[in-house]
Image (cartoon, rainbow, N blue to C red; front, side, top):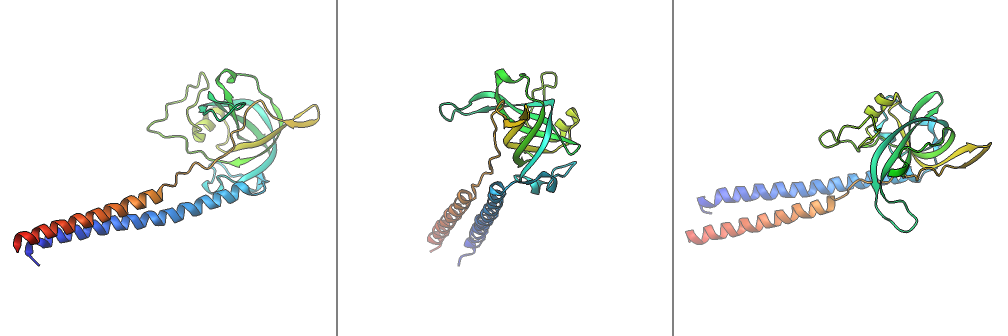
Length: 241
């Protein structure tokens, strides 16, 4: 082997090794992500547990995310309105710009947020029910907020741009804990009836799982790098023969 081939060979070997390692790392990440999604699916399909079994403050435990719970409480007047929009999904469905309504609920002497769901922009400041409520929903500590991109809330107009529980809790004097409504009933005239002032936006799993594509990309780059290295070594050998 020519001395001139040593450096390209080492460079090629190192590049292929790194790219293969990245590909196998993505395969490991894929297995981890699939396991995580499976756990979330089990939580969301489970029978709702009493909230008292899972209530933790001042900061919601990330392991509690998506846990399905049930409880009875009392909704108050306090609300936070989070700007959002819904895509059109068929006749008779809500769509367009609007707000998520996060309402204070008092349960067992503790107050926290209840994410009731979506209202169109025109209904932002409508009066909504205050009183006893019965809820089935999911605990969620949202990751909507990004310090680099999320604008500051307009507190005068009660317009928020992310469900950032720590700041919302400070401004509204509410515990930084939230349940997203799957189904809610309110007590009216001595009977429980469906709460339909707000369209529920139940929790969905929005965790990207692109690790297969990433793995294919890294393995493809490794193959290209290997091919280019072989071609370079062949050219060097041809010149030295």
